[in-house]
Image 1 (cartoon, rainbow, N blue to C red):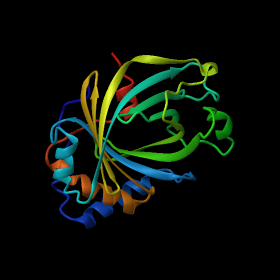
Image 2 (image 1 turned 60 degrees about the vertical axis):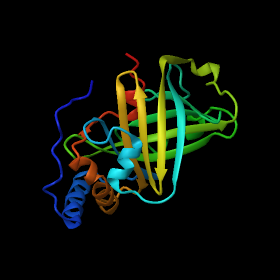
Image 3 (image 1 turned 135 degrees about the horizontal axis):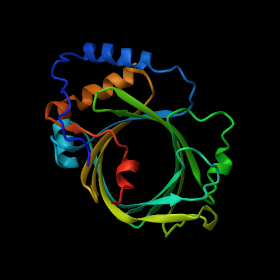
Image 4 (image 1 turned 30 degrees about the vertical axis):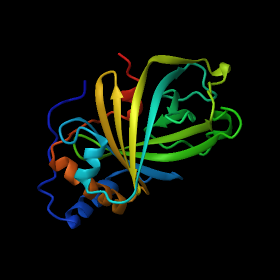
Length: 242
């Protein structure tokens, strides 16, 4: 189970200018690494604060049209991925409530993938596979940004999709339920996992101090409500079937 000690709130950060100064310092302390692609900022919690995606949207004061989508999510170990990495690639299959299937093979690393990484070979899922390269920036329990670098190979269809046999993918044995509420650029997800509920709010952007400050300002109401920040990624949480 995640650490249930409350994270320090941001009530002492009174203004957006303070956020910007904090974010700029945190950004400067990170290694200056060349990495193409966008970024996704995320905050996750399993206790404290809002207990549903809808409540989180209300607490954040997000306005605009809403799109609500529900999924069943299953994770896979991949014993023979096309490209060997450390940690190894992990598989995911999401089935939307309307029957659409999303198959993903995700490579994740604490360091950017080198220019020699062969995405075409790594993403051999079949026809019409897309590749997304992204910096995952998560707010940690310390309220500092933690970075991971990911390459996601994604294939979609309106039918059942399986991983190629050569990859030797094996289902981890648990299926998770997820409800996503999208409002503008923000997505709020409510996960029902074997270990309990997990919520996440995320925002796309660029790995800049300005976008980090914007995200921290938007999630401040959640922190003020006492959310207990979870450091684990959704993949780590969702694939923990024990």
